[in-house]
Length: 537
Image (cartoon, rainbow, N blue to C red; front, top):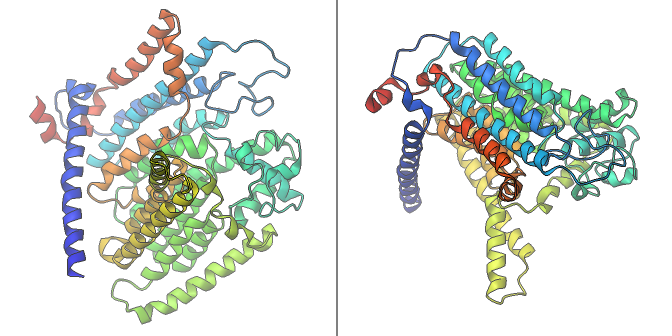
């Protein structure tokens, strides 16, 4: 045991050393080679500047909307009758415009880079200077979110799977037993990614109930169902903002900073609203539940956490943390048994309620690992498995299949996440239980079989109100790199520019270069501590 403690201490010390140097290096490069270094340090002058990042973020979102609205944009589904604009005309012939294709990619990437720059600087200002008007931030969120509400479903086709599953539910066809292909060649089924055509749903009964209700309300109109699902996720993001403000106040943190780090997070806006993922509903219910637990309303907290679990299963971690910390840090294990029993009863009753309303039983539990069919290098456990499997084949061991190696590495990754999460739970009251829960959710994503950017929102919205120390740096890093995981267009952009005319190349370089180097305003100087600014003058 002592050896394990010494090893853990050594690992922790090396992590702090390496991570500290990396963070310092990034900050140095950012200040030296970005417009931040052009400003003379000055005292903070209050929040009257908030309209500037609000407007800049809106412009960034408009660029993404414009680029994603081209007929042949790679960031959305290019199929007839899947949105109100930007889709091909039925029976259209001819070669798509290469210029429009490249311009679409340039506009989207330019908008993404501008949004990341604006949000990053605003988040840093919030960290150093508390007291921003929550009302102003709500208006800023509305301004930033509007283009994403209008835009076609971007960066993912999952919302079309949701709509098809809702149509199945409305006709009493169990999505836990059959995939959307069961519907046949219908407008609901055609836009679904072929990978999921025969895949049963891993989503909980509450989502199926909401999903089927959408299909009924729209009288089984596919596009209207997709629109309602987008609006549902938008409402869920607003609920994230409301819940995280309650949570931050309960923890004695600045609610403005937590709001910017969660509801205004580019990862949230682009993947949960733009991609219309149901993770928004799960995260919203979870953060409200945790906020209620912090405010000593544990039964309601359990109800909301169980409802979040009835959207996606990982929210069950919230139930465990609420039950374990119910009586406070001095409670013995025997004393904790009663709240754990109450938690089991409340969670069981809540899940049973949503299961009865959905009407399809608990078949979703058997489908929880269905996304393991996806092989992505973004997931460390999967990447290691594929690298090992390919290496074994390269040295002649053809009898060992990549699938077998993946099973082992994914199991090791999952068990590692379980081990770390149990350790975080055991030490949660010393480290901060909300923070430990957020870290546990991030660990299950990063060490799971598949890493999708919208999965990261589960833990990040909780860490927004509870992070400590260097976790702030990693929260920012995941938030600005996450949306680029699996993002199409980069390779096409480079290949297209090589063969394009000089005018198009100049335009692309001007847009992307301008977004990277143009100053965003004097307000950005307040995103750096004054002592750091003084050292560079």
